[in-house]
Each structure stands twice: as structure tokens, then as C-alpha cells.
Image 1 (cartoon, rainbow over the protein chains, first blue to last red):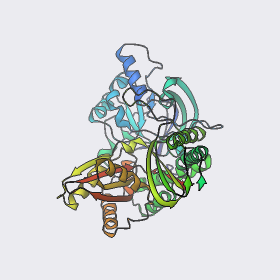
Image 2 (cartoon, chains in turn green, red):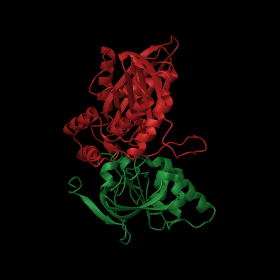
Image 3 (tube, rainbow over the protein chains, first blue to last red):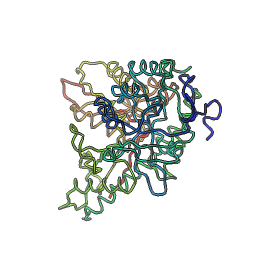
Amino acid sequence: MIFFKNNFIKLFTTSKDPFSGLKAGDEVLLTGDIYTARDQAHKRLVELIKKGKKLPFDLKGQTIYYCGPTKTPPSKVVGSCGPTTSARMDKLTGPLLAAGLKAMIGKGRRSEEVRRLIKKYKAVYFLATGGAGAYLAKRVISVKLVIFKELGPEAIYRMRVKDFPLIVGIDPEGRDVFEKKGT
Amino acid sequence: MRKITEKIISGKVAQLCIDANLYLRKDVEAALDQALKKESNSRARQILKQLIENAELAGTDKVALCQDTGMPVVFVDIGRNINIAGVDLTAAINKGVEEGYRKGYLRNSIVTEPLTRLGTSKFSPCVIHFSFGKHNGLRLTVLPKGFGCENKTQLKMFNPTASEGEVKDFIISAVEQAGPDACPPYILGIGIGGTADYACQLSKVALLRPIDKPNPNRSVGKLEKELFKKLNLLDIGPMGLGGDTTVLGVNIKTFATHIAGLPVCVNISCHVLRSASDIL
């Protein structure tokens, strides 16, 4: 694709410390495994953490994508799969970061508390283009159900993505792209 | 009089659900092209290009434009010279929605119990608005409304003595508050007048009008144009990352109201404004 050819940064989730050194506003192409989780899956993960139970997958170093895809049409890898509004996950983000979560992908602003936690845990928040679900589906190589099948589109899926186009929303130093708009 | 069966109605609704979710409205597509020509911010241009490509891909790949295929709002405008005696319209429409969402591989985003969040196995019920018109036939319109933007809806009951400036400020502040969160550039549906509930309904109906067609009432059309200009100076831009393109369109619909009030509802749509309509 042509749109990010000038100044994007290629990142691999399998690299050591893949997100360190990123700056808010950086354009990134991400390759590797990411996990979808939105409102209900967050609620369940946080409940498991609070009860001290084992999580369905190790969050350490992982990336969560706030996404609930459409049904996968035949002969396709995935349906439409753009980001949902991140702010709804703000109150449920702290425990996941404490459990080792390293990156989040969504759309829109985060709370001041989440910004501080991202800085504390040296994590990162990425923006994906909202409402571009058909475009983003082209960058997904495979999808596998992980857990919470009964939640349908809100279940947790592991997506393998290649050159998934993202913009750094909040960097590991806690800088927020929406606070320095236009630069 | 022409007999229209439940099967014909549900078949048509199913098709409209698929069409609305897969093919971007021509007026919205044109507005994106137009915005790309005018946009001075390079990142905003890059995002607008992604959105234009997204619309092309959705149509050719037969994949929904957006994963949030919305809560379908169906407008049923019952005209003349048709026979729908004995037809359960509500059932036929819900059946059509279920069929369309299943066949189109669209997302089931409906929970039947709002408080317990249970009941996610079906694609219905949808929201239905019935009306009667003077046209011939049965007009069906499907507007699948995504909830990232629906959540930003604002209703305000103004005093009747409120100035036009206060109303404008309210509309602008609704967009400012939505900011980057509801997938800008936005299309605004604004309902002014009626009662609280009717102003909200008007704001949805306003979204059905092509965004390149101003309100036929001159002063309302002028207000739309003025708001369009002002809102595009907010520098929210595509994805909220700045730019000259904060709104693609502003559609206002007005109705008579009470001497004691002035209801105003701002219903924000993301850039993926979807609707499809046909007459049976």
C-alpha cells in the first residue's frame, strides 16, 4: 500500500522490546499476533485477575485490539475488523497493564489515568483508522478463537496481522497525540 | 390494489441491510472525494485516502464497510394503492433484518436485554418507525446506525427565547465533545422542534437526506452551510488528528413545536453514514 510508504516504522511483536522508543504520532506497520478484546471480554479478564485466577492467555508483552469483527464470509480470513472506541475500556485497563499488557489498539482518546499507567508500565496505545474495517481486514493473515466463544463478536480472537497500519496515540513516555495535534 | 406479502417485505429489507452495509452512499463517497481535494493536512489526506479505499474494498470484497454494522433503524412509509391487509409488518421487517444480517455476514450487535446484556443469538429486533405518505407503494429505508457515534447523541430542551446563537453553540459543542472518538469526519443529523422524542427522530430522518442537498427552507439551508463552515474550522479532522475535514455534511430537519420550548437533538454519524431505500 502506498499511504504509509514515506515515514512508517516497521514493528514485529516478536522483537525484543518492540515498542520502546516510539513517539506519539509515529506511523507504524505492525506484524505479529494481537488479541481482540472489547467491553465484555475486558470485564471477564478483570474479574479473573481480581479473583487471582489464571488468565486464558498470558498477557505479558501482549497486544490487545479493541475490535469485534463481523462474521467471516466464506473464502475470507476475517470479516470487517476496525477498532472500536477505546475510552469504554479505560476503567478496565489498569489491571491488564499490571498483568503485563504492553500495547493496545483502538480509536479515540484515553483517560488521564490510562495515560499515566501507560507511562508507568512503559506500554503504548495505538490508533487504527476507525470505520476502515474492510481495509484493515486485508492486513489480517489468520484468526483463531481463544476463549469466550459465547460472546460472539466480543469473544477473544488471536489475529495474526501483517503490516497493520497504526499511529502511536500515547507513547511509552506518556505523550498523547491528541495533546499535540497538527504537529 | 397490489398485494404485498410478508415474504416480499422481508426479502426487500434483507437486501437493503446488505446494500447499506456494503456500499457507501454515493453522496458520502462524493463528499470524501471533495474533502480530499480541499484538505491541506497531509496526514488527514492520508486517512481520507484510506477511507476511500475502504469503500472500494468493501464493495468488491463484499465485506462490511465497518465492523459495527449498527443497530438497524427501519423507516416504513406506507403509501397508497397497496394491500397489506393481514400482514404483520413488524414481524416481516425483523425477519428481513435477521435474514440480511445473516446472509451478508454482518455483525450481530444486538442484545435483547439492555440491563443484563443477555440474548445475543439473533440479529433483531430493530427499531422501526412507521409513517403514512401520499406516494404510491410501500417505501422501506434501512439506516444501520453504529454506536460509537450514536453514543455521542445530545438532546437539549431550550427555552423558547433562546437565540439562534445558543443553538449553534450547542451543536458545535456536541461535535467538540465527540472530538476524535466517534470516527470523524462526521455527518450531522439535527432535529429541531416537535417534542423531545420527535426531535430525536427528526435528527435520524435528517441523516437520510443526501448531504449535498441543502434543506429546501432557505434560512435552515443557510444555517446548515454556516455550521458546516464553522465546524470545519475546529481542526478535529479525520481520526481526530487535525485537518480541515471535521464534518462532511450538516443536515437539519425542523418541525413545529410548543410555545414553551425548543427541542434540539444532535445525532452524530461517523463518516460511514449508511442507508438504503426502495419502494415496493
